[in-house]
Length: 82
Image 1 (cartoon, helix red, strand yellow):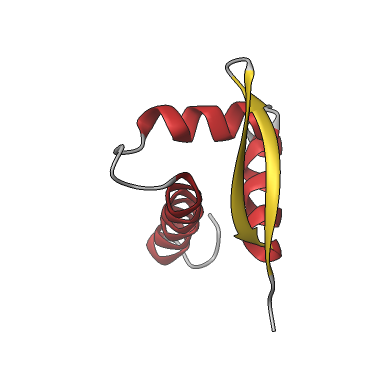
Image 2: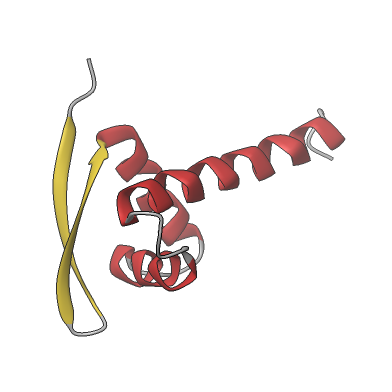
């Protein structure tokens, strides 16, 4: 069973929190590293782009899903990684 945990970051000079399951947090951290960003910078970027009717935790999950789907689509285009 995966537990939802609350996490805090500072973005644009203020503290904010979000609740995510560990696998989503792990993937967000991987995405941030691959882009040369801190986790807080990636969260701020996602926060800036999200519809204000979407809560931050949901926006973070949707971002992870979109990144994984995009990577999967690339694999489908070339299943041998060429």
